[in-house]
Image 1 (cartoon, rainbow, N blue to C red):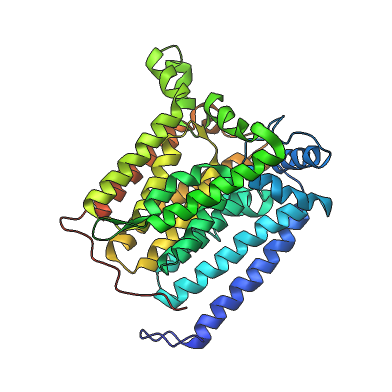
Image 2 (cartoon, rainbow, N blue to C red):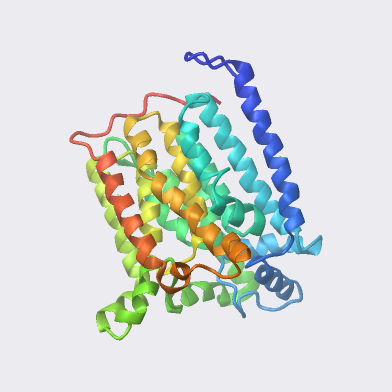
Length: 387
């Protein structure tokens, strides 16, 4: 049962918001189905059909984890069945997020950030609903992880993170940030669950498909920079420099070092775990040489979850990230919808988008650290979400 809010929020108001979210979700499910097979989802279907015919699912252009293949078994029912699963999971996670925001903060100004990041963000709708990419499932699992972590359900948090890593690997780097706790403690149970789930999934995949399960890791390290990445924009000017080539070829080291820096700083300054997750996630994506905008879908859903903490620092952090949130929406409009309307992508998209996105990312990260910086240790959370 929902309770009336102390600020005058009534039970009927909350139910109205929930009902609107349900209708919105149902409409998007039908819209996603009507859009059919588009963009990278075409490649998914080819990969799944190769797997179902007995071929090696990683013998072509499959750069995903074993969970991607498991989802692909739904292709037996229909090529759109896996898409409906992933879109449905994203919309379920969104409903749960809206419900917790209502229970925690009421229908207040915090929904401005949520609105910009989710229902009114072109990237969220385009990548998550229209294209139905597997980033939608990653985003859903990350939302589940946040909600479970806030309720101190470490095993469920680890399960969600482990499954997300079995789909696109990089969520494994977020585990140390999720595991941060007050008073310089680490939630080792959460870490163990994440690693165990990931290892079980990888071992099962190895037994089924062989050592090719590691191909995505090799492919990720050898592929060139692309699109939003600063490495892609700078390559025409610095590509012949040894140090630049080293940074590109050893990009995994660069990303890991960046995340370790955020983990260390967050641990030292006792930054609340969810604030650290959002900042660390952005650092990870900013340093990754494969700068595809779909990777930001999960991050977009993380931004409004900050309001669940009911902390001034978290609220300030969410506000600081609004420019980046809006930029991602404009970017995807220019990349996809703008192409259809104008006939070709704008020049800034094709010739050096990284020179625009990277400064915005860096400024956002700096503002984030100012927003959460504390002279003393962070206070423990004093609220508990309604069950």
